[in-house]
Structure formats: C-alpha cells, structure tokens
Length: 257
Ligand SMILES: NC(=O)c1ccc[n+]([C@@H]2O[C@H](COP(=O)([O-])OP(=O)(O)OC[C@H]3O[C@@H](n4cnc5c(N)ncnc54)[C@H](OP(=O)(O)O)[C@@H]3O)[C@@H](O)[C@H]2O)c1
Image (cartoon, rainbow, N blue to C red; front, top):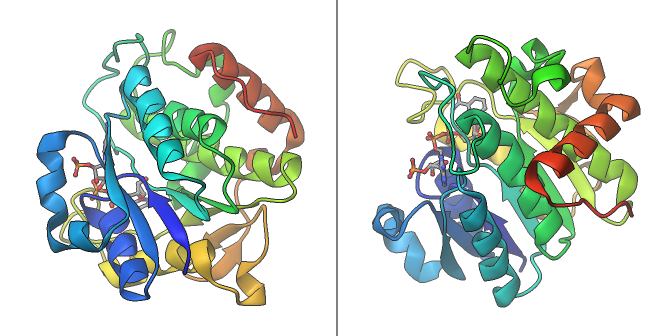
C-alpha cells in the first residue's frame, strides 16, 4: 500500500486518479483549493489520508500546502495534477505573476522543492506542450500581448522539462510526465473523446505500479505508452535555464542533487 498526494483532487482527472488508487487499497492524500471546495470530494474523503487546502495561485498557500503534506509524512508518490487551461487574461497573483504560470508551473516547482522527496513524481502535461517553445525570454508574460493558448502550452512544456530535470538530478526518484489526452472533464469539456477512467490510468499506474515498465524515469507518457516530447523538454540547457528562472521568480531553490 502506497501513500500518494494528488494536487487538484476535487474534480476531473485528479479526483478520478484518487478514486482509482483508493479503490486499489492505496492511501491518497487529497487537495482542495479552499475549505469550501473540500465538500466536492464526497465519500472519498472518509477513505483518504486527509485533505490539504490551499490555492495554488498564492505562493503563501503553496508553502502552506507543502507544510501540511510534510506534517503527514513522506509520500511514496506525488501526482502534480492541478492545472488551469485558457484564462481570459494574464491576471496577477498576489505575487504579481501570470495566473497560468503561477498555477501550472510555479506551484508544481515550489511543491517539488518544498515537500520531502517522494519515491515517484508524476506531472500532468499535455500534447499541447509542443506549442510552448521559446518561453524562457518572457516566462511571466510581462512583455508579450496575452495569448492564453500559448501560455498554457508553455506551462505544459515547463512541467515536462521539470520532470526530466528531476530524473537527471535526483536519480533515486522516478520522475515522469503524462499527456492524458483530451478528456471529458470540466477543463476538457463534454465533447472530449477520452473518458475519465482512460484519462487517469497512466498517472495512477506510474504512481504505484511495480510493473518494470512503470519503474522508469525521465519519460513522457500517453495512455500507458512512451512518446517523444518536444526536444526542448529533454535539453539540459533549457532545463537548467528554466529551473534557474523559476528559482528567481519563486525565491525557492531546487536542490541540485
Ligand atoms: N482534460 C483534458 O482534456 C486535459 C488534457 C491535457 C492535459 N490535462 C491536464 O490534466 C490536469 C487535470 O485536468 P482536468 O481536466 O482534470 O481539469 P479540471 O477538471 O478543471 O480539474 C482541475 C483541478 O485542479 C484544481 N485547481 C485548479 N486551479 C487551482 C488552484 N488555483 N488552486 C488549487 N486547485 C486548483 C481544480 O480545483 P476546483 O475543482 O476547485 O476547480 C480541480 O480540482 C491539468 O493539469 C490539465 O492541464 C487535461
């Protein structure tokens, strides 16, 4: 039985992965953006290891989430699932960052650095990450006109690069990225072709399976098969520049080894 922390587990793929892992007998530590949203978890709450609360757009909340997780103990696996899609504008978090960057990139980066190192890390990316090239010049959308689709694509490229950085720097941790496909969730919409169960399967499998195929690191997955991500994601120079910039934007350093 493993203990798995899943961000954004009030809805969609995060909730579905939590449900599936709990049904397999694992302990899931859930996450809601606010105390008010914990109600959405329903009966799963009583079968969980707890619910941590915090808004990923707020750096102070992200630090608090890390503290809440660390107080419970070391996780066997963490699925960095929470995310937002196309926002109408750049927005500004309390720290002044673009909301998409803060929720989709800065929060998983900070949680990775601040939570006790787990055995496995899984990051939810998207096939759309392939449109995210060239993002490092204006990571926080301060110079460019807002482009919500491009901001989303960039954020999903960042998490593949983050997953691959950790695979390189932290050899004892299995770190992978997943494209769940276009899934019928609040984000994906009713017309999406992929059902929730298929959409959650790869990340749940990577989090706990002892199948040798799942015991790998630095790979990009789609529906239980490895795929080639954008070349930038696997480029150590891009990775190092990204991590250095994320460290400066958040004031949180990612341990080198
Ligand atoms: N669905 C797709 O077609 C698709 C395709 C490719 C990749 N993905 C990726 O898969 C992941 C999950 O997507 P989904 O379709 O399950 O999305 P979803 O149905 O919109 O659920 C997103 C989850 O993240 C939480 N969340 C969003 N912003 C948050 C914040 N500021 N603080 C705390 N929690 C926050 C949401 O909380 P609330 O319930 O309170 O809103 C919800 O629990 C995302 O990273 C997404 O980019 C999805």
